[in-house]
Length: 348
Ligand SMILES: [Zn+2]
Image 1 (cartoon, rainbow, N blue to C red):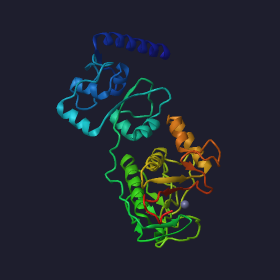
Image 2 (image 1 turned 30 degrees about the vertical axis):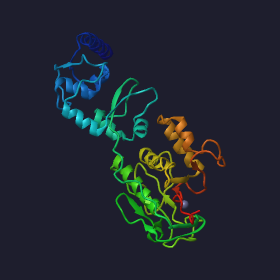
Image 3 (image 1 turned 60 degrees about the vertical axis):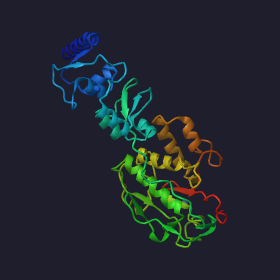
Image 4 (image 1 turned 120 degrees about the vertical axis):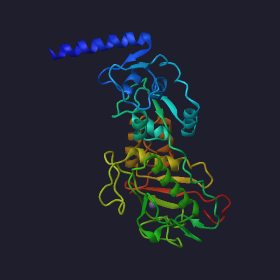
């Protein structure tokens, strides 16, 4: 009995959908949400709102909504709305098969939360053909650092540091050993920039553990072969929930505990510096951790081409391809090595 009435209800609503389709009018029924309606007719939420002069998403049963413009271009916007949107930069994205909110967020520099809020989605269910509005977070306000010559001397494993730049305490990160928080200017500046842009995208993410850079004058320090000339820095991962002991200690990254979005953003921030003159030379990460991140990324729809450029995985621990390379013991932190400033002869 219950089944039959459910089927009847579905049939009725399908029928009313049919007629409504024809007229370009949707009559709101119990349980309708703007998101559902927009999805049904292939519009985005904002255009349904604009078309019907709705200020928010509350609907009343029986209310009639104009949906005739759906499946075509989004409704025209007023000048003010247009201006606000241009400033905000909104991307209209059509969901493809295999997409996940996490993957879309990672690809477009936004977060699952932002997408959910913007598109009024409560859970993570999205379907091929859905339209989503994406609002990528703005570029970080910190400019790229300027070259400071004469700081990093010699090689990273037999060098020293002059006129060091200190990574001072700051918002969003924790320095594990203050006496090893000295580096070259660009090492420090780009690390702060990374933290800033991760937090712009994920404002609620926990404090990040920062491990050793170099001692105040550089040179050999315990536990490390490199870290001698201010161009190496160890950095922890971002977790879904801050593990106990973190950030005063590093914690091994697993599929279960990693905050994929924030960790991915951190890696992308560094990888994207690969072509800058003061940018990143190499990232070290255990092969097993590469595999975890590679698989998480693939599952979220990050294109294979991008993954192959980023990771040495799956080519083997000794392969000389991929920007991120295996180094034993780097399953609880990454090691980022920055380049020598151009024309800085003493920096090797
Ligand atoms: Zn290191």
